[in-house]
Image (tube, rainbow, N blue to C red; front, side, top):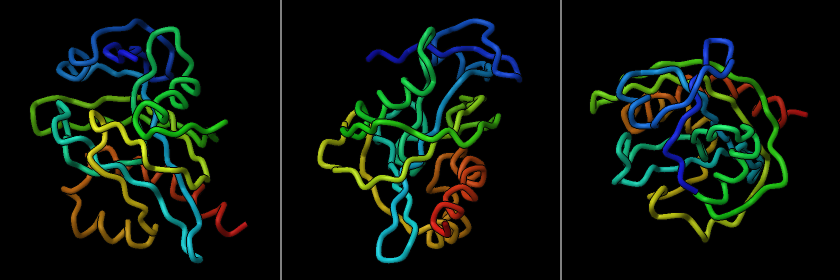
Length: 181
């Protein structure tokens, strides 16, 4: 699917228009996005599926981030877009995602672009087949223990997209809460 548009929103996520994705990032316009966190329990540890962005991406290429993230297109629901994007990027499908909240962030990128997003956060507990990654989107994937991830964010923060740490902080409690239950 061609994902070259973004939905412009106000600070309450009310739609105010749409525009070209690159233009929104050049001008730092607030737009709707989603971030997906795929989580599993493995050998007694909670692990998060991280994605390394393809090296040729126009921003943040080669950096690690959450399992999947993107932008719904005009007239597309956030959840349906997120489910479709999982298949497009990671090559697997899920029947549902659990919405765990949203937040707004603004991050200036190294190439003078600005991420300014009203980000809807989704979590799914799954252990999918990862044999069909889209090389146009994904350079690599890795399952990382939550404790190890927290250390990496402290010792190697520049290995991650600028939005990953604040987004991870927003969903971390829901990841840990599920593993205790």
